Image (tube, rainbow, N blue to C red):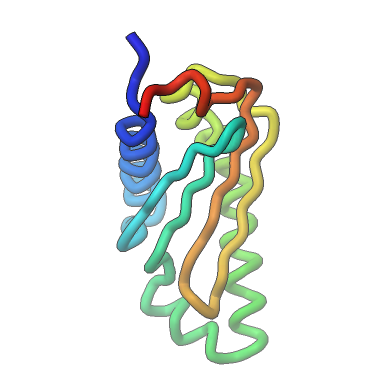
Amino acid sequence: MPISKKKLEAEISSAFIKFQRELLGRGPQEAKTYIVQDMVITRFKGVLTTEEKHLVNDDTGRRLVKKMRQVLREMYSNEYENIVENLTHCKVLSSHSDISTKLGERIEVFIVDKDLEKLLIE
């Protein structure tokens, strides 16, 4: 039986929040996932720790925070992709991530091997 798009989006968001809490000791304040054709896009708000919020007020600190988050994401890339694969039953072909130190947001984009949106019910 097909799953609803909203339900799957919510399950992905919840799984990412849980994983990040286990990994970093805290998760984002908010996460919202969007499934668009063959893309799974998750936007995380409120991702910076208290220390990171202080660091991003300085150019060197901002670069340090971005680099640290990039290294962490690369270290756990397989785990992020496995979350998407396990919940969508699609193969992740590529994934992309970036953080905005200005807004304290992070975005994750996963390209999967099927038009996932077509397989879901509204």
